[in-house]
Length: 295
Image 1: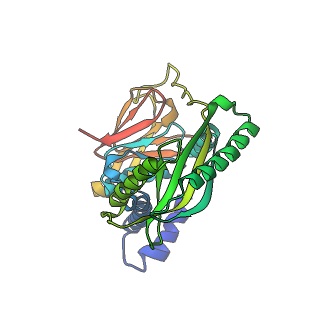
Image 2: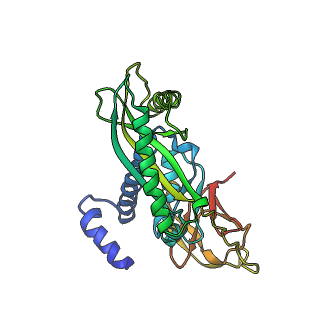
Image 3: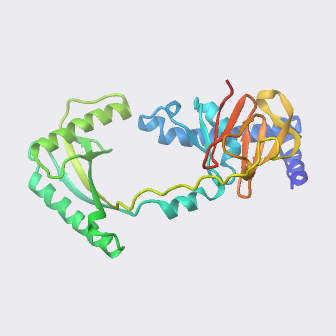
């Protein structure tokens, strides 16, 4: 209800702050976008990853409406809106690999690491995982196990999880894991210490190697961008300084290879994709919209 939303923003925000209605609404959007940026930084920058090196996948009913604004704040130059953003999580649940994680506390302090004891614990967890996969109907030749360990510097309270690359625990394999811990710690926190390393928790991931899912390609006979236009209307964009005439497209009628210059809105049954001014969206063979700054 656009009228009710405008009335609420005008009465509760714009008027008390002596602001224009659309300036207030844009401020609300800005706060929401920056909140999302903070959440993304928590799982990227604070874990040693530079978001500028990744593409931003915009899923959910509202995700693609915010995606380019969020990407710009993070310095990301590629945004992907799946063909059905609103059901991406449900689709992922159906096609995700069958997997279960197991963990056991096994405090090991240097220099007396009990490699035999660690191997025994790993073996017990793998046996549990094997029984679970068999119960789930996964053939034994498709069982996959990966070993992990939580390590920390002695007397510290936070651990870093690293992969245990070898199938058999040995002192040589353990030394490689400890070296990987130092590397990962420096990546995450900017430093590594010349201190003894404790092993706190052993982990096993049990999964069924059931293969990847073949995504269906779009059928032939879909529309060119010009034929997929449903209407046009004035849309407010902060970077444009106000309202801009914007084409509204039927998202799921766009043919592969379609190129849509922003500003544009792609309306689907389950989501709305917003292409900002100075950005371009390209429809790939699967119906995903790949958005990048216009060249």
